[in-house]
Image (cartoon, helix red, strand yellow):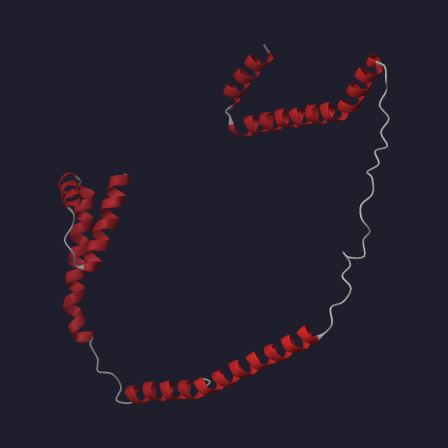
Length: 183
């Protein structure tokens, strides 16, 4: 089926280009009557079209060349000349130069960073309990939010995996995986 589709696409492209068919397509057509019929009907249609094309040829209008040249001339007149672009570039450069000269001649303003005082001694207002039992309790209390957050992230990940499994796995496979996970 796929080979036939590929063969027919290839045959069509080679007939349109007037090129010879590849060897694999010829071998396939020897064993496939559908592709052979497609090739023969395509060749017959191409021959009929080429025979009838000679009678359809017409001479162009005698005014066609004049219309084309007129359109080219009118488009050329609407385009800005290179000299206009040159003047526009020169004016732009002059404006940039004038602005930079004015800006560079101004005296430097007081910089806000220079107004900041030197840093003082750092102050750490943290109370650490002295007895070791209280230090252990203090560490557990300080780590509790992180442990809670980690547990919430793990629960969210499990919920997401179960949702994806329900959505993409067949029901019997999902049921067997849920039983294995519960054990």
